[in-house]
Length: 256
Image 1 (cartoon, rainbow, N blue to C red):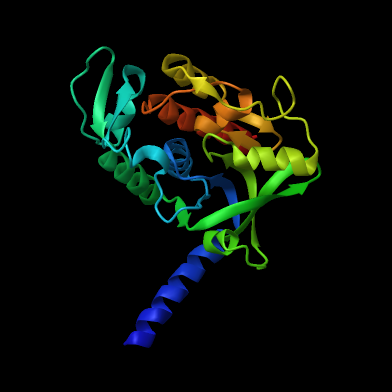
Image 2: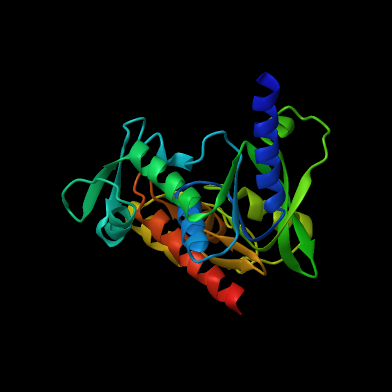
C-alpha cells in the first residue's frame, strides 16, 4: 500500500507538470491579482500555470491587516466578491469587509476549478528570452534556492508571462537587469514602490497593469513597483481589478 500511495502521487504530479511545459500564460505569484487573472484566462479556455514560491498560494490575503483576518474591498470591485460567492458586510463609506481566509480560499478554489494549474513551493528564478521577447519561465524548487544548492532548473514555455510577485516586482527587476532591456516606464527601468496612499495606490495599480515589455506583463503591487506608484495596504479591490484587466489584455494579445 505504501508503494501504491507514493506511485500515485508521483505519477499524478509528474503528469500535471508535464502538461504545463508549454502554456499560453505563466503567472508568477499566486496573490490576488495573479489568481483573478488565472481564473479569467482559464475560464476563457486558455492554458494557464501559476507558480508560487511559498507553500501556500494566496499572497498577502491570509494575514489580513496586522493579523486581523479581515480585509476591505471598495464598491467598484464588490461584484467580484459576489461572482466568487464570498460573503461580505454591508457597504459603509464605499467599502465592504470580508474574511481574508474565505477570500484567499475562494480565489484559489475558483482559479483551480476553472482549470488553472497552481504549483506551490516553486520559484521562478529567470525567464526564457528569445528574439527580444519574454517567452517563458525558468523554475526550480524554492527550498533548493533558499539553501543555495547547485541544482539546475527546468523551463516552461509561455506566450505571455505575468509578474505578480508583489511589492518588489522581483521578476521584472531581474529581467531588465539581465537582458539589458528598456521597459515601458518613464525611466526605462523598475521605478520602485512609493509610500502608502491608499486611494491613489488603488487607482494606479489598475492603470499600471500592462505589458511592460514584449511578452511580459505586470499586475497588482508589482505593477505599482514597476511604475513608481504608491502602495495601498489591506484594501484589495484594486488587486482584483488589476488581475481582471491584465487577463483581458493577454486574451486580446493571444487572439491576435
